[in-house]
Image (cartoon, rainbow, N blue to C red):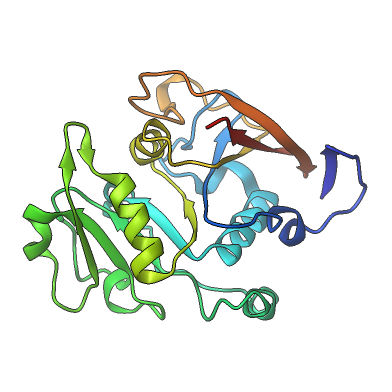
Length: 240
């Protein structure tokens, strides 16, 4: 992996590069095609970035205290418990993080298939953030954070605060989907946006926007650019 900005370097370690953040941090990490789609022709993100994207994907997960995903993503059945590669396990442990990061599912109505391995076979138990009115629908074996509702959905500021204060999950990685990522940006909770731009054009028929329902401008500052296997890795900080 090469760094292009801020200072060019021929060979860099993604774990060290992306790990240079301090304090509570909320990072959105997503892959997209060169024409802006976050899904391929089959409706998944798997077919976009290839090995280079997966290497950074695994690195971001290894650095995070928790991985936040939306209910629609979970309903695809393709989100399983987080796992650690053997080479990342000791590096994560050196940061004081034991085991894989838990998945945090954000769902307003808690209408999910609780038989999925995500809820029954995770080494680190999956957490659910949902509305107080829906908390009773979550099985007893699944840890739940019940939050207030606002006119735009769940109170995500309350959810982030409680994940950090009650569960010690300071460094959060949101992997989407587009509605959750937009809601976090709209609420002013995102510190960093990491976009992995794949060298692929998907076309309009299969196009899924990076963000959904973002109704106001959010200013960003480019902090780093990397490249590997023709994938462009962009890191933006929000100007909050």
